[in-house]
Amino acid sequence: ATHTRLHIDFGGGIQTTQAAEQAFAAGAAQLTAGSIAAREPALVGEWLARFGAERIIIGADFKGEHIAVSAWTEQSDQTLTGFIGAYLAAGATTFICTDVSRDGQLQGPATDTYTALRQQFPAAQFVASGGVTTVADVAAMRELGMSGAIIGKALYEGTITEAELRAELAR
Image (cartoon, rainbow, N blue to C red; front, side, top):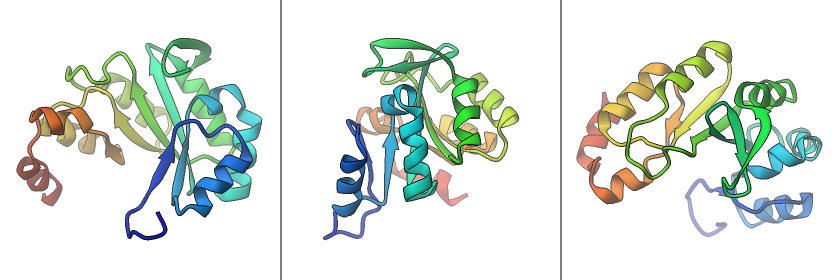
C-alpha cells in the first residue's frame, strides 16, 4: 500500500488495536470495522478516538431491521438504526450499509431503508452496498444523498458498464 497512490480501505478480520495499527502502518488510509463493531463497541469507540473518525468506517451489515455478523451467518439483537445512532454518538461519521439479503443478487438496492437512514441521520455519510444493479440505481443513490455505492458484481456481470458509470458520475 505504501508503494501506490491508491486510497486503500482495509476491511475484514481486524479484531485488535494491534491489527488496526498494522493496517495503517502498511499504508491503509481507512479501515472498515464490521462484525467487531457489533461485538466490541467499546474497542471500536477507542479506535475512533485514537485514529480519528475519518479513518474508521463502520460496517453496518443488515438483514431486515437488524445487524448481521460473522460473515452474515448470525443476526444480532441490535437494530440498524440503534447501531448507527450509537456509533454517531461515539463520533463515527461514515457507514457502509450492506443489505445482506440483496448482496450479489442484482435485485436493486434497499432504497426504502436508505431513505429512512438519510432522514433519521442527515449528518452521517452512508455508502450503499448490496443490490446496486444498474446505473439508474447509482443515480437513485446519489439523489438520496448517499456518499457512495458499492457496485462490484454489477460491473463484472455487465449490468453497469464503465461508459454508463462515467457518464453518470460526470453529470
